[in-house]
Image (cartoon, chains in turn yellow, red):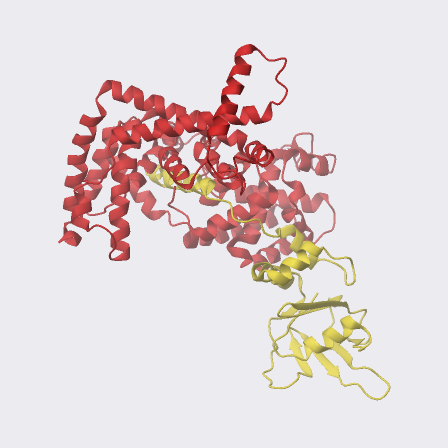
Length: 170
Length: 464
């Protein structure tokens, strides 16, 4: 039967794969996925945090998972800008940072269409990352205070202002 | 052994196998599902996977694709026992496995489900997760409509996905041509001899293909291992009952499980992986020699002449190939092609004997390190352990002066060491039997003329 040679080739490749040396152990897919699925503020797996910081491979795989979970994501800022970005579009959502005034911290305003609303925002730049709860939308928008006194909120504000920052709405 | 897959594929598969700590058998199944060595339909595992995920989506209630991803990536669902514990008792399952239609239609065992979830992790994470979002999206669609139509649609998408992956990462066409040539050469025969391998290789050399002798020998290893199954394929060409197909699949499974288990090459890899920094149980040169001798498993037991040819002239040929690749370095092509530097069969036999003796000595030392309390032992056993202690004191290798570290090192490698010692002993005996049939010096002289002639003709262009 003409299929014999094909089957032999497939068996040969399978046997070769079984003999291929195992690579150095790396952080597992399940651990990265659990990290991608975590609630904002929930305890994190330190081994995952270390891998995300130290291994570009782990960070890349994690972002592929985040992209799959996200309602919308922007690998980099959509708008080219040489200064701080005050406004950017992430999928169908609009993100705007309103500057601080004398008695209020900067505010992040997320506007979007009716339908599924993101529960959290995660921003990434280099080895810095932060995830925050977005809360329920009111009249098609969510407002988040980027309070300089709250380290995570301050970090989110700093990251979002950078055009090189990746954003995931989860 | 190389051929038929690239590094990406090996890494993708290893990530799943290591992450789930799969058994050899399950790794073998997964490798076959990926390469397509499944009959009568190479996409059957994907059909089963789609139906298994649909059954899980229905049974676990409202869910979305992310829940299915979580199931697929869970290393805690890697064994039959683990999936049985999680899912038995739920709707659509019986004691043996998933049976969504009360066992009337599609079903799978717990072993099958554990394997299918590993395949799910593979398709999700293949190509280092390049297709993760796409596959996760398809799982969303399935979760929204986990009915037979949804399952069939997912199966078709996964089949296209894996077919594209195979095109990119499993270069099977050259291998298929090689096996077609071997089948043609043997002309319907399933049995072959050492000289058939040599004659086939010479024919390929004459045709200008210039495959490595060792590579060709590896293809014959696979051919021999699978030859018994090939007859079954003929039956599949004719209309046959499903039951016959299933019987054939079981034979293929069983045979491949045999191929995968208990390979000395695997044992060697395990020794290398487990070798602690401290005691030098095997030197680098010894490991290379062992790898050379045992790589063509099971020929080191059954076809020692092919092992000698590969170790002696195969090495000459890879020297030529390396020089051609580098474009220089070391002896010239013409000089190498004469095989004047080929290692004689007698010398190779001596080296194999020395390796076997070394491994046997290391095993006795391992026993001496492990057995501290010897009072109740038989006199001969005690004498053997004392001899091993004396051996241990004579060994001048790194780490052998630190008894605690040495004991830990041996404990980590003992099982693999035992396997290597056994196989080295078998090779030694096979070589002794070969030498009784025909003096090795005569065989070497005759083979040298053959290989030198083939090399001179095949590499004449580059040698000039």
